[in-house]
Every structure is written in structure tokens, then in C-alpha cells.
Length: 186
Image (cartoon, rainbow, N blue to C red; front, side, top):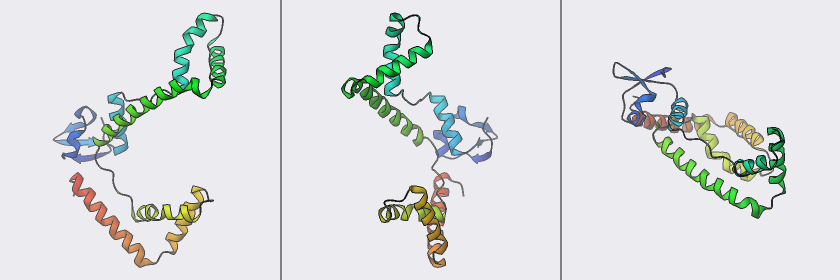
């Protein structure tokens, strides 16, 4: 049973499988959007695809074990790792291609699950400001690390004129009103 906050019955929550939400008196109890996402992933069984190296080890482990039955699991893993390292890019290509294909399928399934979730709550005025100026700051300071750029943006926000901050607050209020309208959360 999920129950950190109570959410009224809404059209966007009809997309979420009822098995993930506990109903009481026509009310949906749910935790956060991220918890709903985790529960959807768990229920659907979607998992990240195995890496190219793991696909290689799955393909070669049984042959290596039959050739050398005396090897311990640790020794088998070490041997497979050294064989993988010695492969050329051309020899690794089928495993990498298989991984890329599996990853494409995974991303497709994840986007389908994401579409079943209610919309994300918009970020506050500061987050809107960061999103607006981040790319400009990256262009302006290409040698700085991301954390340093964020620190500079924070300093710029502190020094920003009050009327500019009010503009971002108004944008936030508009976005939150749209979000509430979408989720019938008024």
C-alpha cells in the first residue's frame, strides 16, 4: 500500500495500474511520482539490458567451464575478463550491437512507462533561472567544471535585481497553475 499523500481520483491517475494504488473511499493513496515510477518498473519487469561484456560472458562461460572444469567461479570471471580485453573492436562489435539494440528497446519501454505517470511538478523560480542561463554559462566558461558553473549561476541569482526575480516567480506561478490544471490538483 502506498500512502504518503492522498490524491483525489483524476484522469491522469487512471493510467496508473490500480494494483499499484490502494483505494479507500474513492481516493487514491500514493507516494511520490518517483515511487510510482519505481512501482511501475517493478510491476512491468523492465530491467536495464546486460552490457556488451555481460553478453560476451554469457555466451562464452559454458564453453570455458567445459574446457577447464577445475576453474573456480572467480578464475572463470578473471579469464573471461582477460579474453574480453584482448578482443579487437571488430570482435566485440556483435556484443556491442546486441547491447545497443537491447538498450533501444529498454528506452522505448521506459518512455511508455513514463507516459503513464502524472506530470512532473515544475521547478521553482531558481530552477527556471538555472535552466535558462546554464547553456549560456557553459559557452561563456567552457573550461570550468559543471559544479563551478552552477556556483557562478547561484552567485548571479543572489545578485539578480528583485524585479528580475519577480519575473521568474511569475513564470513559476504560471507553470504551477498549468501543472495543477493538468493534475486537477486545484
